[in-house]
Length: 123
Image (cartoon, rainbow, N blue to C red):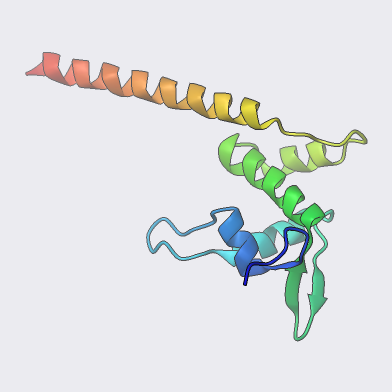
C-alpha cells in the first residue's frame, strides 16, 4: 500500500527520498538527518511512540533544500544556516539544479580529458 504524498514519513523513508547512502556499504544513513535536525532549528519532525520521528511535506522540502545546498552545492553548515534565516522563502529551481549539475559534470569531464591527454604524452 502506497502512502499518500502528504502523509508523514519515517526517518528511513526520508533518507531514501534524499538518497542518503553510505558510499562503502550502500546502507541508508538516517543519522545525517538527525544531525541536520540539531543544526537547523527549522527542521521540526513530530516525535511519537518511543522517540520515532515523522516528517511532513514541509520538513521534507526543507531537508531537500539542506541536502542540495550541502551535498550538491558544497556549501557549509553556517552558509546554509544564513540562507535559511532570510525572511524570503528559499526556492530552488529544478531546471537550475540540473543545469548546475550538468556544468559540474562537463567541467569534470574536461579535466579528465586533459589528464588522459597528458598521460598519453608521457608515454
